[in-house]
Length: 477
Image (cartoon, rainbow, N blue to C red):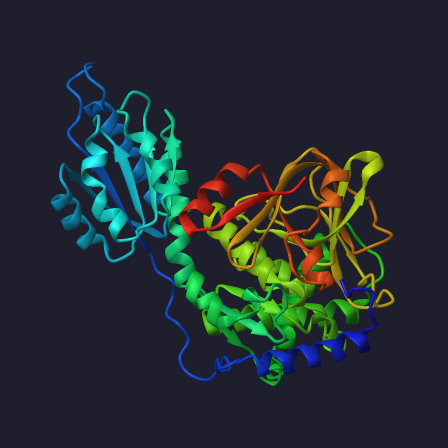
């Protein structure tokens, strides 16, 4: 989206925003100068079984068979997730808990498993005092301690509760807990200007609240990387997009070649800098060299969130979800149709693998960008009818806007708006439209407009994640 501006107006806005950003204390070094971060590696999570197992089928507590089943499910999740390291132990006292925490490390996330009646409350204090994000998992009839987890959260601790008979919830707990240390290891590349809410535009605030590092990219450095892309590499990328497209509508071979070249250069940039996220605040100015939209699709499908228009709120949202559910997001603009109780989302870049890295590619057309006279090459991706989705965005680094819906229409070939479009049935479109972005104190259209869409209903996980990260959730509509 260009917010109904011309390309020249967009570039002028970008220059002004960049000057404002510099005046606000942009102190981070340009990427390419200095040593990139090492690979992210595994995130350590402590697992504490509280108390001794119940004797057979007696008493309030988990028995040995249940303990063994939980340990087996945890081992499977550790192996399949691949990027976590579990440190398991049993505690019957605060002193034993302290010893276990020393093995895990300061501030490391904790999965506390309720084993015996009132055992958890006796061993918990060192975890609370150490400000460890914590999930409490409690099987039915394993004790009464489950009811204290919400009380600890209300007291200001980063605690959430999973009370369930499903051992699969243990994997969900690990997925949510790993988000905190993974964000702390995250390196984000930004082509200034940054946009979004005030807090999200500040690299200092992002570092303070989430632990992620934001590094600016010099456009000249990237231009040199684009020039260095070999013709053979560009041709391979262009042929892939051409071969798998359902139809090529507006783009000519040169449009596709330029976009493919940028795609290769973006992948190399992220590899060189060992970065986990990208935001480009100058994308509408790239037309002469090639639009980044194909490259954004590639990055998102490969597990690297990439945000259009420098939207740091949307980028951080995609990072949270990538770490929690291993799925990319579709960042887009909203528009309503209250006659159908529907909300549209549309943008000119989107992932193919909305089901995750092992899912099938969604079908797509190759189109010209809808707001620059049909020039360039962008994907128009056709998402799955009937799919339930979660629409969300982290704003101000402390609040998650969220809603759910179901895709009821996908155009065969888009006309108005950006190229990739979905129409979703929502709970109450009129109410949602009337309250849209009402909690945001800004008049910036892009910041008010954007949301990120993910396949699946993740509202429950969002509430758990918010508790673990000291955030709140505002359900829209």
